[in-house]
Image (cartoon, rainbow, N blue to C red; front, side):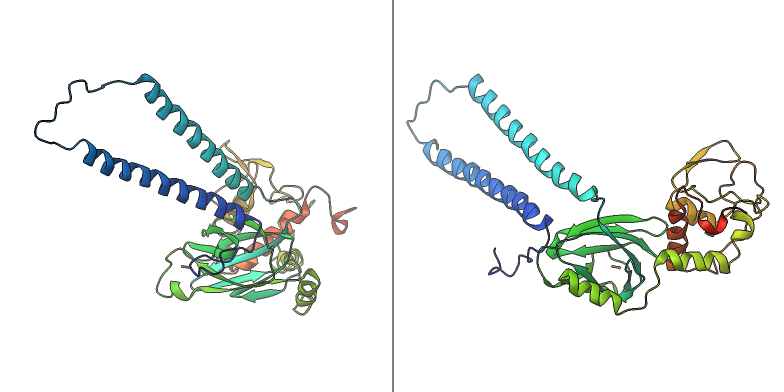
Length: 317
Ligand code: CUA
């Protein structure tokens, strides 16, 4: 639809036709109202213009029925528009549970992307057709904004925070992706291509790359950096146990309670003394110089994977 007008981007996701429907509805309604008002002004201006000898004795000052009508009808219309928009927004922020997760890191001035099996790419994003895809995103430096016009989706990436966005592609092809937040000198070059492929082709593409899932890479880092000497169960309890910790409430030394989410784990790696867990001394070294943004994401993926169950290598120790 509308492909013949080049200013409209292609519709290639489940969000696209719905977003466009609301957009065109609002545009058409605004155009009709504008037209009615301005034609009315011109018509009434001509009809009731000042003329010599004109006598208009009974000017009406009040019309309750008319006033109720022009309050209630637009009121209902605006509430309807609100719910229409709210529903779209609700669906955009509610990621389906079966969505495939892809990690995105933005940095001046490129997009670094990592797939579930560890395959990486830069400034391109390969995704399967007809499957919900969730992007978990963060920035290594300043604020960027991941924007795919053909999908009608856009989300900021912030340093120190993880944001999410999801979509489901409905059409095979190649689409532009952009950075939509001014982020420095080469902001305009910070773009790339989204490749929507048949699921089978996507699988094939996926297996063509180096396969090290983020969770495994994270576990390797965990071992390499010696985290287990303090954090594993029974490791003389110098640090809080990480088993089953993710998204749990943690009580700090000062009595306050925080949720052990991704942001908290990241802060604990980069500024370990910021939030000391109750009952522990600040012994942990600072890992700022040893870990880049992707490695932090891998460690977080590993800690997430620890869930509630004790992994086999820690049992019976
Ligand atoms: Cu990144 Cu603009």
